[in-house]
Length: 411
Ligand SMILES: Cc1cc2nc3c(=O)[nH]c(=O)nc-3n(C[C@H](O)[C@H](O)[C@H](O)COP(=O)(O)OP(=O)(O)OC[C@H]3O[C@@H](n4cnc5c(N)ncnc54)[C@H](O)[C@@H]3O)c2cc1C
Image (tube, rainbow, N blue to C red; front, side):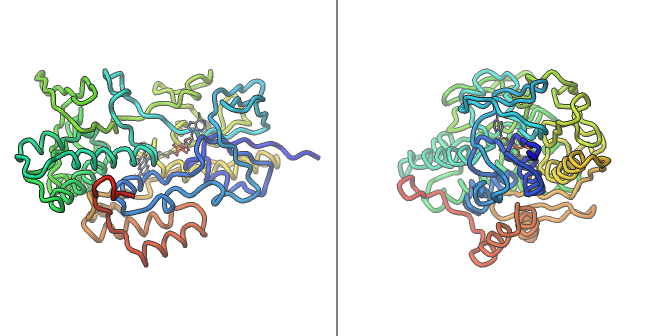
């Protein structure tokens, strides 16, 4: 008898954790466009050198057992009627009996002129590498004895969007640059701006944690501009608007953390979606009109979850066990399960020395929170084998940031 074919699309939190739980139970193929998983919550630490690529981006070869067949390719189209999936570099479409959609989102530039072309996104290892290179290059270009105001102009970076991502990133960048100024005996200070359309930083996070975030932004000398909209980017300048006044600044780099939108492959599907284009799923994670198709993570709107969980790794990670359980139940002809998903707590890294953690309704910050965050995230990495290797490396080898050295000395 042939085993049912399960196709999982997307090798992030939703896809990988579903594949790991299903491994061995059916004929499973995972299709994804990279050769490694990425633990996105620690991409900031990768930028600063506090962690290395192998800690947070293990290859699928290392993670997935022989029971999961992995294809590295880009999904271009899904045909829910023919039950096939087309890939960019595979001639023939793949057929499936059951489909799991976990393709995640993409950066949303909200139509700002020049944003897609000139800003840096921050979602992949390569984006962090490019940002680090930009920071180093801007420092390398400063001749010794340059006047402080000129240095400040030439080492100006902006981060767009002051959600958790923008705050984590801007404090990390500012700390790295401040440290580099001391090491290189440069005059003055770097300038890191954080630009937010809304009234507050970390909208959606509670007041308890915002106190630590505000404090960290101050300590890292990040210049916060709320009620400010970026309206235009060019190769080396950006323009922003605050209460009707426009200003244009020269910049060495603008990083865009201003939002996430639907994956274009999911956008093309003619199925039920909410007004943000997110797939509406049943409490079992199945698509309403296609009971052999499950969706989870950023592409799925699941009603029975704490609203702040939408678009988080926390939710995708928790949904993966429900998805795996229900795929098995479906195959065995058993009743499918439902679950309510809750916040597991918040942990946010703030600069290279601090973090803030909200757990059990209580928030704490500082160096202790930084250690707690490392411990918490060790436990969330995929597979025991990987957790043990990484945990031992952090415990024995430490998690110190890597200074921004001149380009020739960077590794
Ligand atoms: C820098 C950063 C930091 C974050 N920090 C946190 C945090 O601290 N806490 C938290 O809860 N959440 C955090 N998030 C959000 C979290 O990463 C996402 O909510 C989560 O990854 C969603 O999981 P997913 O499986 O839906 O999608 P993803 O994890 O994004 O996985 C989607 C996968 O599909 C692949 N893919 C996409 N399109 C295609 C295609 N056409 N063909 C083939 N493969 C494709 C992608 O490369 C990716 O591997 C962060 C996100 C970022 C970018």
